Amino acid sequence: MAKQSIKGRKKHSPVARRTAFLVFFLLVCGLGYFILSGRKLETTHYTISSEKITGTIRIAVFSDLHNHQYGIHNQELVRRTQQEQPDLILMLGDMVNDDDPDIGVVTALCAELKKIAPVYYILGNHEANLMYLKSGYQIPLDAYLIQDGISVLYQGETDVKIGENMIALGAFSMPEKEYSEETEQEKADFEKSNAFKIVLSHYPSVFSRCLWDADFDLAFAGHYHGGQIRIPGIGGIYHKDEGLFPKYSGGLYKLGRGTLIVSRGLGDHTIVPRIWNRPELVIVDVVQKD
Image (cartoon, rainbow, N blue to C red; front, side):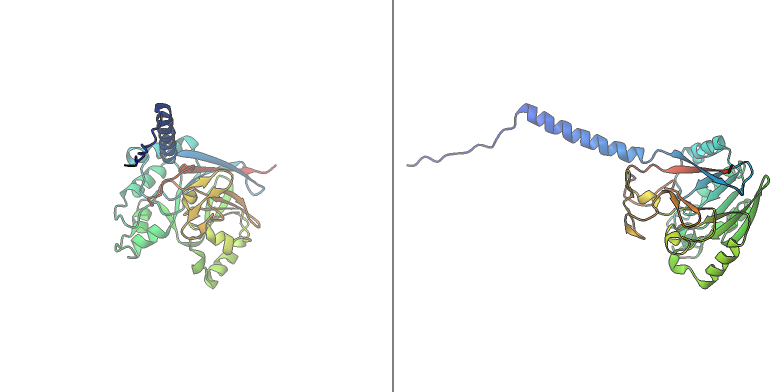
């Protein structure tokens, strides 16, 4: 009878097994670190100079909180804002979630922030969905905010005086598909102002398609959450509105005649974790140009 050769399974040495386990362990730890660090709040500072400004105006910018809390009742977020001593606080929308009727997080936060500086709030898509039944709820968030002394801006210009400086806030918080002839007229009226002009929009895409060459000094937007996952030196990877590598995913951008700052936001409303993309409180100093 012919002998049958029996091949045994190849055995890995103890050193190879330990090495494989170590590599796996380091990969898991690295991924865990990036996910956890993506939840840690940071403060991002910018400085803009203008001949229209006397002295310095400090602006704190909040966007896309999505009902997240930094400490009990957002004490950490309030504390950081107090430390920065802003003259003006701007909220760019999506501070709530459209699938959660509880608006107590944002109203409580606004109540604390208005003790620090005047608060101006524009609506994002989540606020609009909550307020206009698109989510199954009809919650008059704007009415509650106004009742609490928060200025809610819908569309067009609002003038604000800070010290000796006149600031024109232009609210254009619509996606580019809703940009209309009426909006174009409001933009033309806003551009006539001689004040330091700040444009507020929840949507960055409105700048790439509708407001790129508008006559303003400074603009703010949010919505893209920094692209959720960021590649250093390149930017955000994805947002459903624009797909891969959205043009203005987070940071400072020079447009035709003005400067756009896009916040990476303070919270999330997605299962994809932030990686290389910490949530941020944006602080901007507008200083007198020599």
